[in-house]
Length: 120
Length: 231
Image (cartoon, rainbow over all chains, first blue to last red; front, side, top):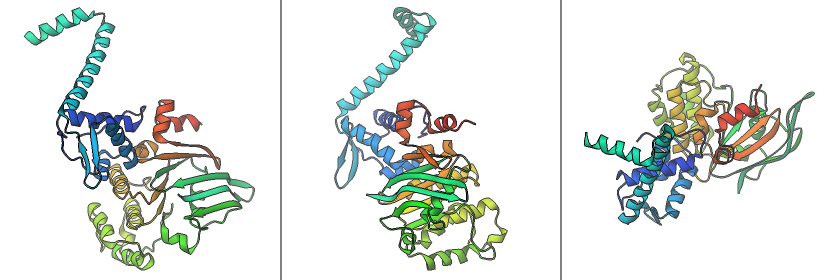
């Protein structure tokens, strides 16, 4: 995993997004144990407290949970992960539609273009 | 609880004010960047923490005591200049440090030396400037201290070693210990920091967390630094 960060946004937010991506893509499967904060921080080359903050946010959203003695785990609730995945997909689509609108395409025209491309 | 605190700290060299009324408090478990242009007072502050200079005015405590023998046991300091004797071998300085400091871990130092491909039998005299700096930093990081004060730890080493050093700082992270790093290579180090302190002409002009700066101003610490210290 290659961790990269934009310079103009909080690092904890970007960490949160990238960990979420690892969860929805199945790199960290449902119910699996997450690496220790220190190891993960070293891999991403970030401050451990910042990573901790990102994980706490994911915990608040219910996507990860802490077991007091044994560490941190990805939620076992697959529906929740699928929902998070869908939310991310919608975000990407909206962004894409905005860009297409910038090029002068309506949503219907964009959809037609996509259909053509998929058929080819 | 704060591991380091100072209030009204002032240091003058003759007519020149190196530090002027500095008030700071450093909590445990933080990694802090002490940032400022050349001559802003970064090294002076670190020297005061180590009792190498005495304050002109104000107070400074480390773990509740003034700098002295007790605080040296819990502070691991990387000075801006090397002070090791040139005739020594790397293995000699390891022995030297384990004699001096109870909390010095020889295995930890040896591991870092191996990773950075520095031979224990080499004489300091024969090492390049950058390698010497690496040895010095290894000595400092191999201690199990409560406060690490690093004066320009990455300035003289190559980017690959820089990454390794930052990685060592992260891996060494301990919720009971704090690390203060003075530097002007901000872009390289920003991701590793909790908080930053901006020093300008001996005065603290900003203390903030890295993510607060990014959140509130929408710029990196590096960009903010360039703005604040624009020549």
